[in-house]
Length: 500
Ligand code: AMP
Image (tube, rainbow, N blue to C red; front, side, top):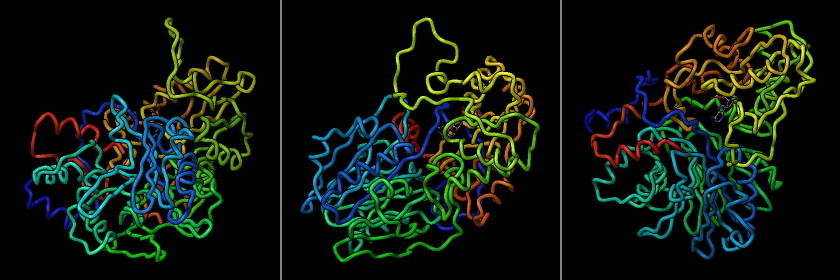
């Protein structure tokens, strides 16, 4: 694609993009979400951010960071690992100020990489700037290439760094204008918090892929990916930041604007299915209620005679409860989850069958033996979890297993932050439902239909991105922006650039 064609595409994107299948080199590692948090005007900004990140830990476990401003000067602490590993009391105490932002990150490809942990911080002509970003940009590689051609040196391999470089080059009259300038060239998903020494700018991309909330505590403003992070610090909910909205928080208060051309939102329905915590409200609806409605819809769509309904814990618990309530079949805890699993463990040398799943999930034989089971999971991605769990249930005497999935078949990649990098690894990309049923070894299998899923959200059905279920994307995909240069370094960063 020529630069002119690219500019034209950015200026005038067609309404929906049909994704061309180009398997990437990234392997089959599941990518996940990130979480962002910000505090403006509270003397305990660092501690509040720490707690907020704690509540958002499910959105990313690979790295965490906090940046605070004290008298206009930024101090940061970032590290690889869980929030509780990265922030020990003495480290947190060093991050001072009443303005701060934080980030939990999931990536990763290969080794843990500290330089990719956010918030990213940089100094430029007008002072210091820090950015925390949730979501993936589809045109990051081409923007990066343009910046590098102009002499920019990148510190990380994340797409977020282009935001900083574009801020530093902006001629905007003030900080907010520079941030808007930077964001206006981006395509894809961003729920972002950006700060300098004096103010915070929080923004959601025009399509609103990822959630972002505004809260208030003791007169201070709080921004968080999900409401569960407002709850943990007892902050009041103000409202959701709207798709395309840019909010400035400074000593004069709060200012909102919508600087981008309006478009129909395309929020990520996978936030409802799996990503967000059930005790959060996103996209105007309680996640728990929506997940239960998915389960209830599945019970109506795919009923079956059975003794118990079981969840693959924990993310599927609400959907399984919904199925149970709607069908009248009792819910039981047939699989127990170990909540204390760390991220690394030493496996016995002899090897144990299904060790990877067993370390986290173990069947409760008395609940399973001789039973006809409805097993509910929120999604099947590669099918590996389901296959192992089903084998465990069979070994524990399950009489029948009817697998019910509270989302449709995932047939293609997500480019906006839930990145199943290689579509060929997605089981529903390669097999039809009957083949998947055989592969998993269940008596019956049903997925929630797209129509029933959308109806169960009680939201405007046009306001969701369904790319992973339909292969129709609301923006160009990264494949439309393949970098023109073909050197090794570029190949390298393209493998990580989408892993926010
Ligand atoms: P798989 O084993 O690859 O089929 O993954 C499906 C399982 O992973 C289900 O139990 C889901 O609850 C869970 N899951 C779904 N999406 C994600 C994700 N983005 N990251 C991690 N786990 C996920």
